[in-house]
Structure formats: structure tokens, C-alpha cells
Image 1 (tube, rainbow, N blue to C red):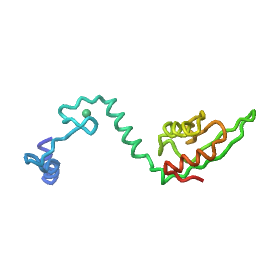
Image 2 (cartoon, protein in one colour; image 1 turned 45 degrees about the horizontal axis):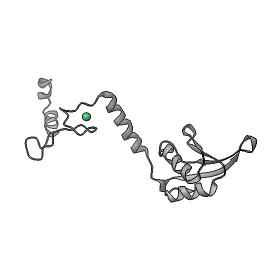
Image 3 (cartoon, helix red, strand yellow; image 1 turned 135 degrees about the horizontal axis):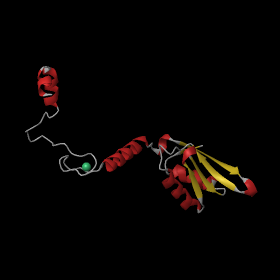
Image 4 (cartoon, rainbow, N blue to C red; image 1 turned 180 degrees about the vertical axis):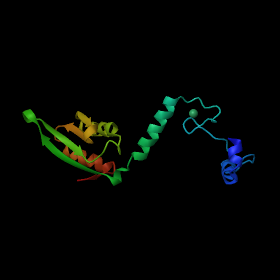
Length: 142
Ligand SMILES: [Zn+2]
């Protein structure tokens, strides 16, 4: 490998650039992105690395409430059962279980996350308090 690099002088410069501050007080040794330890001391398992990467991806996919519009409606089900349906907030952009917990606490009602459908459902007619709670959290509501 060393012999090969030597035949490409430009490549060799690139390689040395990767540790530009090597040997100076500005030289920061490579650290693990996940545990923050020096890479030589890092004991993260591949599974932990994969989890951390997934979490980073999840965080990157999150959207702030102000950029999302919730569509709320009341739906009648069998046996005069009524549910409040929230559409428009995706499982990718939001922590839907956490959001449901907040709505359940405000409405004092049970509910379900339908992650596959990017939907929240609360038992009963809670149009007003669901709208208000989502607005308070910064979502646009329609
Ligand atoms: Zn680590």
C-alpha cells in the first residue's frame, strides 16, 4: 500500500491533510461519536453503534411543530362509539407515543398510536381540547 501511495504524490498529500494539526496543541485525537471516548479506548459494540446511528437518523428526521399541520376530525364508529382522529403528523417527524401521552393527559381519555398510518386516535369527542393542546405545542391545526 505504501509503495502504491508513493506513486501518487497528490494522494499522499491528501492523506497527510487528514491530520492537519497533528503534533500541535490543536491536534484533537479522533473520538468516538457515540461514547465520546478516544477511539483507541472506545468499547462500543456494533449493536450500540447501530442504535446510536438509528437515533441520529431519527433525530434528523424530526420536524419542529411549527412546520406541521394537524388535521383533526371526529369519527363515528360502531355502537355509537366516537373517536377523535389526528392526521397529518407523521411517525417519522414526531415522537407519536409521547404526543399521545400529552393528549391523553389533557383529555383524560384513552387513545392509540397508529404509526403505520401516521395517525393518533383518542376515545371520545375531544376536538376542542386536542386542537388547543396541539396549538399550545406549536403545531398548526386545521
Ligand atoms: Zn464508543
